[in-house]
Amino acid sequence: MKYQDEYRNRELVQGLAAHLENLVAGYAGTMTFMEVCGTHTMSIYQYGLRGLLPAQVRLISGPGCPVCVTPNSYLDKAIACCRIPGVVVATFGDMLRVPGTSSSLMEERAKGADVRIVYSPLDAVKLAATNPQLKVVFLGVGFETTAPTIAGSILAARQQGLGNFFVLAAHKTMPVPMAALASDPELAISGFICPAHVSTIIGADAYQPLARDYQRPCVITGFEPADVLQGVAMLAAQVVAGESRVEIQYSRAVKPQGNPKARAILDEVFAPCDAEWRGLGMIPGSGLAIREEFASFDAERMLPLTPELSREPTGCRCGDVLKGKITPFDCPLFEQTCTPEAPVGACMVSTEGTCAAAYKYGR
Ligand code: SF4
Image 1 (tube, rainbow, N blue to C red):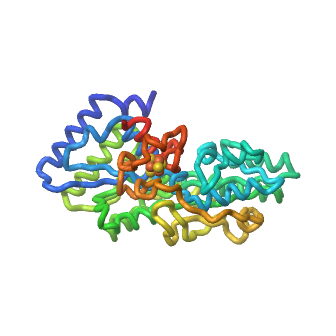
Image 2 (image 1 turned 90 degrees about the vertical axis):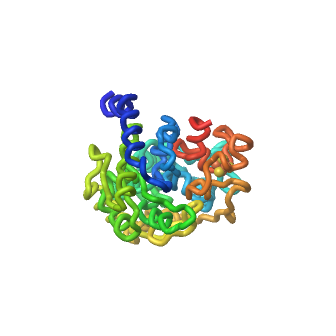
Image 3 (image 1 turned 180 degrees about the vertical axis):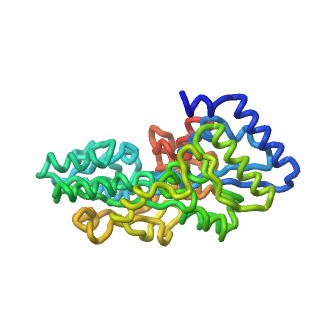
């Protein structure tokens, strides 16, 4: 398949691994690169890419899985939503099994709540249009990749004059937490494998402050094995040369300016806000809130939500996994009491979660 097989070619991948080895041959220290995208995390585990790296290069996983970084306080609000009579919660499938403080959407559905999986936010708009007696709440979770489609659904609901479509918004934006991680001396991040999908929207220029103000090389990288190895080699070359620039390895999809139309629709509906991240805590300016003009579509403003007092699962180290401070194998619950069938934390549920990737491919 074009753009897959050619980037999985064994000789190409081995050649890139040899190139990387040559690049760092005289380098005495360790380079630590963080990938900030759940799909990269999956790819690195799936293709065993860590096994191809020279001793000087280390990869750690960051907060790149949108479901994983969504804190329990949000899940508890979503659960409170579905307990309101006449409310339908519509969501992507990943959210169903993520444990909240004392329940999950799946458990609530088993008890009779109306929780439905949709494949697009526009499906939720259609659900609201065809069921005027119900209130439909779409769970707005994700980075800049999904946020424009959710903004589009709010615009579509307004155009249709719907008064029964709402979004429970918890969108997060990517460059800001990377700056927080770059400032953490314990992590000693040498550079970032920047997210590919997010970068198609925000563009490579969004990472310039990280390279300029934090002196961290940034390379926007595709998902296939050859993409990732080439991206790592580009980062390593910058570190060896003592440089820090933003580069695009994934040039077949990412442009410096991103996607102006998608960014315009984001700006129309959402405004930057402070956001709580699982593991990283409250980060100023790292989220997207529904603007005042669209308040009538904001579930938090329009519905009487009474969530329980939230707490994170006992013993779960998702927070440290999301900061790259430990690997899933360092969590005592991994494989013992926490498995994809019985997940303790969000990182074991999502298809992009680091613990799920380690369980599926890393053992
Ligand atoms: Fe949390 Fe399970 Fe991952 Fe441990 S293995 S950090 S309990 S999700």
